[in-house]
Length: 397
Image 1 (cartoon, helix red, strand yellow):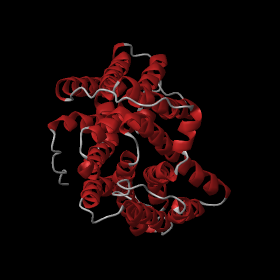
Image 2: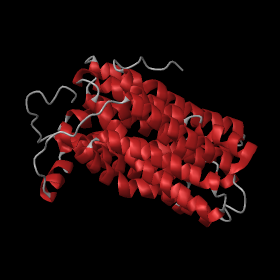
Image 3: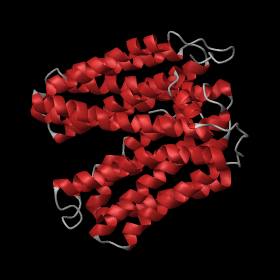
Image 4: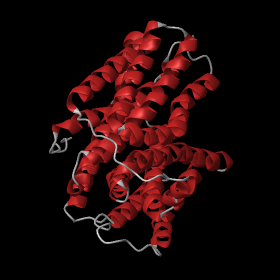
């Protein structure tokens, strides 16, 4: 896998590392809680609660921290979130008791809610308009790089030293990235802005310029979450071993990581339009969900590759469109709200597939997701039809 070319400013390196940290922290722990000591995870209900804590904190807090970043500046919120992430991780290392695992996981989720939207807002602020696609493609690459080895490396650490060793590594990682960001990321002062009422906020978030890319990001995350969670189930049902099913999930993550920087560069060069790219990404993800209905290894691998390419295409284009259509003084709020949309997709996709599968079969669950994703481009076109872009605002559309 070839990493993307470096951004024109080295100051964005810690921001990409922050994206890696939140992805690795989320998947590295979540994938290995079930393998933890019985004293920490005593039942499936406890496991489900621990998994929900991290995502639940992000759903509730990301918009709030995004708005705070606009008010006081994204850099202090980024630094505070990274330090809090390190502290929450170190908490469980210092107090190895089952009850403190809940507090540590909740703290990690709350901290990620602070530094994740702040990092994406700074990625936009520290890069010129002509490099937004490339910048978000690189950010997505490193985030995908966190998702890919997270479960495997986390499993090795839990096997070698239990959850305390994994949380210890996360504490060191969070502290190191915080120090790097403190040294390298410049102060980006908040921009003056007009007073915003609740009606103004609702109007802006209801605009197709926000809804279309956010809905596409939610659809991409839904497909990714279903692929990671359910393709191994399909593989086991077809008689495949854990190595083959694990390889399929790695194919998904690797395809997403490889495609994102290339899609960003194509957007900046004018070779790809946002609307076309988002529609194609949703159709590719829908085709991947359809291929998951095929039996055997071929279906699993095709599904993983297509979902990976589709989500890799959508992610940088969606964030670049949000950055291009948002006043700079409201970037944190927009990125926080968009991250909320992704979290809802992360939860909604598996819930949809599981609900349909429980009433029929997993094949029908995949079909339901495929239909929903395939309808996305049509709904986006209908929603955007009455919109008239002002001059200078359609360069990424």
